[in-house]
Length: 305
Length: 311
Image 1 (cartoon, chains in turn green, purple):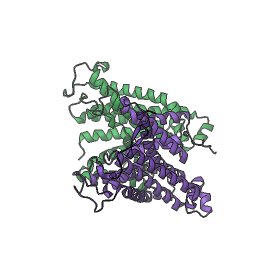
Image 2 (cartoon, chains in turn yellow, brown):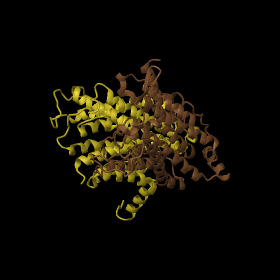
Image 3 (tube, helix red, strand yellow):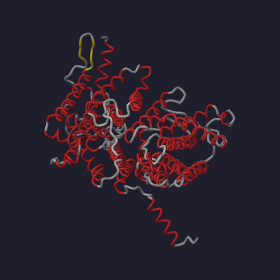
Image 4 (tube, one colour):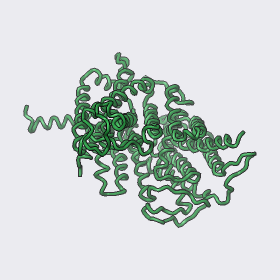
């Protein structure tokens, strides 16, 4: 049922969920994640097919050459994509984050659409077909589990730490009441901007990794559909703890594939899950209260100190 | 005025009219509930397909019933309003399933973004199962009794373009007259202004919400039918693109503003029509680029009122 290729995609979904979660944890409904994901993927696709020497991968590679692209070059690409997207987010964030609520959501949807049309029309991104023959780092899909899991653990570790650090607390304060947070002397714009930039860095690196995983990259990777699907990761998984979007991303990425046996009806069922999920579990599947219960249960049964 | 210029102008106003229809649908719902109905694009698709079927169109080879058709073959002028009314009824179902439960328990408005999109995904994929993913062109005889083009001065204008313009103008006119002068229209505006006070005054706000959904579904269905007959039905997802642009128009005009939605739609259509053909691939980004810039300069839209933050 779940093979390694799907497992890698699920991890990518979890990463995108975290990218949407970050601004939301500071009360900002930004749907820009697919735009940065698309930019990161395009960067990796271009660098690895045209200028592999930039990341120290040597020249003369082609897509058929399995396992020819070194791991350090992939990591360097992910770093570059993260930096590029972080820089873009830093530049865009200051004006964009003045917008509130639904205005911010729609402005970021506009950003996603602009990036999509740009990737479709720019002379060097391969048009509707996209860029294909992106060199593989590993001979099989299972190889990508390592970098995907590594990035997820890194992001999770950071977010776990954030919960008790000034930045994380400031984000939570803004989410609860922005005006009150400002009265407490929190530089709200700077905090929101930090969350937005971190979200973009994560989405960009994920995109760079995904380009190699999928072997091909086109404009459809970042679209309005992706905006809402990634938001669904957070809403359905739970938006009060970082484990929520991770769980939502894993589950909702796997779902359409697991539903493949039902054929054409699978997208109808997927739609039903998105439609009914928030009605049945408005807080999401993973809530802080649930985590606390699990913690207590472990304490009372097996887990001796 | 040169021929090409006039043609572009009319094209712009005609497609701008359709954008305005979609944006007005969003506006009505936003003004009474303060939420966005992301199923609007799917209702737009539905209107197009229903118009096609009601006119006696056949289901294609990839559909669930290849070659099947309804036992009716209505003329366009009958099929379009009927398809729009049916889309309105489906919008009521969407309201019942995706919005009403959340409203009853006063859940976060954010959730309705997800549920309404879920409803849209379900609708579009049901259409896909029924009709297949292929595109459909309306039969050339759809408007048989009308000439293909009319001469206005030195220019020739496609009749379809005029029809589009006429239907959009009529729909917008009817809507504004209804909102301003009828009892139920004024009740709807009262709910939009202040739902609690409206309820105290004896207005059934739930009924007004359903009315807003029905009208917005009718407007989306009208748009879908019009685009279907003047361009084609480019697969079940074709309405989604219009739904998204309607969203851009909605914000451009200021959320909840009826004249804003109309002006925003026309502006968007006109700007798109004057994108040079060498750059036609970028046309779909124009709406969003304008939106993005406008939002940064005027965070409440072109004609929007500045929201006052209450403490």
